[in-house]
Length: 469
Image 1 (cartoon, rainbow, N blue to C red):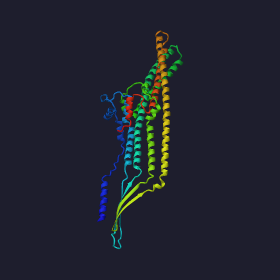
Image 2: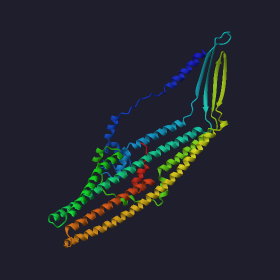
Image 3: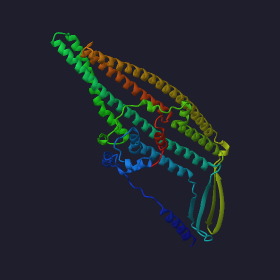
Image 4: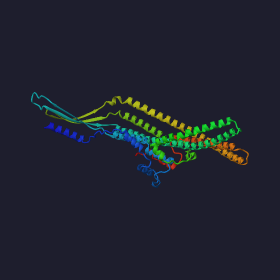
C-alpha cells in the first residue's frame, strides 16, 4: 500500500505545479502595421496633448499653433522611438532584479527498486524519497541583488542619456533650419541688388559708357549668388526631413506644422553659464554617473567572488523503505571551495575593478578637456560676433551717408546699390557669426549636460528626461 501513496503524492505535486505553467505565445513583427503606425503619428493626438498638460502646458493653449523650440523638444521626447528602446532595456533590467532576488528552490529525489526475493524472507520492494534544501552562505543573494540594482540604474540613466542626446539633436537641427531660413532671406536681397547692378552695367554698355568686362564680372557674381541661394533652398527640405526624423513624425506632418519664425538669439542661449564649468560638468554628466554605477558593479562582483570562498550547503533529509526496513536519513553536502579559496576568480574581479577605476579617471580627464575646449570656442565665437556686429553698424552708417550723397547728387545709383549690397553682405556675416555662437553654446550645453537658457522650462525637461512611460 505504500507505493501507491508515494506515486499519488508525486502526481499531486506535479499537478499543482503544472497549473502555474505559462504558455508560449508567438508575437511576429508586422511591418505593414508598424509602417502605418509611424505614418499616422500626429502632433495633435489626444495622448500627446495630455503629455503636454502633464508637463506644465495650459490646456487652453492646445493644440499648438506656432511651434517653438521647447515645443519641438517635447514632441521629440514623446514620439521618437529611441526612448522606447531605452525604456524597454530598463524594464529588462528590472526583470533581472527579480531574477537575482529569487532564492534557490529545493529539489525532490525519488528512487524505486524491486528484487527477485529469492528467499521469500524480505519484502521485494524498496523506495526512497529525499529533499535537497540549498542554503546560500556569506550573503551571496544580497550581493547579486545589489549588482542587479546597479545595472537597473545604468539602464535608467541610459534613458536620460538618450533623451538628452535627442534634445541636443533637435536644438542643433532647429538652429540650422533657422539659420538656413535667414540666409535664404539675405541671399534673396543680395540677388536683387546684384540684378540691379547687372541692369545698370547693361545700360552703360549699351550706351558705350562702360566696358563689357565689368558687365561680365557683375553677371558672374550674380550667378554665384543665385547658385548659393538655390543651394540653401534645396537644403531646406533636407533640414526639414532631418528634423522630422528627430521628432519621430512623418515629413508630411511636420510640413503642416507652423514653426515660429525668429532669428537665432545667441544672447538668450547664453543666459546662464555656471561660474565653475568643470564642477557643473562632473556633477551633471550622465556618462560619469553611469561610470560610477559600472564601478559599483565591479565592486559587487569582487564581493561576490570573495563570498564564494565560503561554500554553500545542501541539507538533504530523506526517508527510505528498503525491503521491509524503514530508514530515516539526514545528509549534508557542499563543494570543497575552502581548499582553493576562489583565488583566481578574486584576482580577476580585482583587476576588473581596477580597469573600471582607470576608465573613470580617464573619463573625468576627457570631460575636463571637453569643457575647456568648448568654453574656449564659445569665447572665440562671442568675440567674432561682436566684431561682425561692429562692422555691420559701421556699414549701416556708411550706407546712410551714401544715401545722403545720392540726394546731394555727389554719387550715382550704382555706387549706392554697391553700398546696400555691402550692407547685406555684412548682415550675412553677422548671421553666420550668430549661428556659430549658437552652435558653440549648444556644444557647451551638451558638454556639461545642463541647459544654459530658459532654465525654468529646460530644467523641467531635464528633470523628466528619465521618466518611464
